[in-house]
Image 1 (cartoon, rainbow, N blue to C red):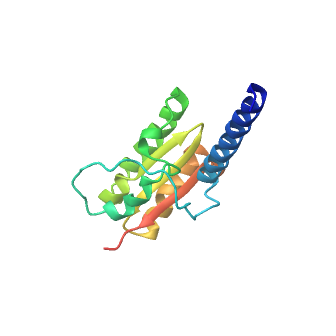
Image 2 (image 1 turned 90 degrees about the vertical axis):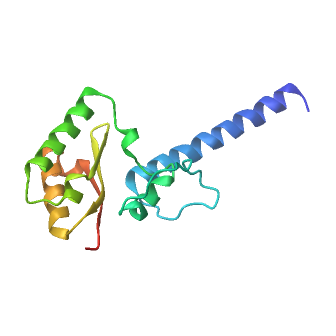
Image 3 (image 1 turned 60 degrees about the horizontal axis):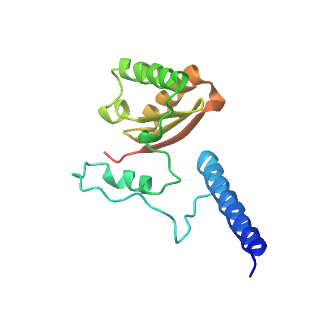
Length: 147
């Protein structure tokens, strides 16, 4: 095999990897796919005490799932997250679960994740986020936890 053939195959392999990565990122953003491949990369396990909502957090072990450490670092993303968090914390009618909802903002797209105590709480949080970020910029991944 000559150097030209090796370069061609290396380029084709790189292009295929980039294509698969972009499909995974797009799927994570739109959440149009719910089936995880058998060989999906997972985050390393951390020996941490399990809280009462740890089972809900198990979904975050997949790299395609947004987690708080992926929060955008731009001033705009940080400010958007801060404003949403402030409005949620001001509402004393919400449970501690609702006050602890994950707010992840990347490039102006807000993802709300975690458990709340009722559908009413979820609607309330989503409404606050949409009023601040815009209705089309909020992705709802809120779960209703059993009491």
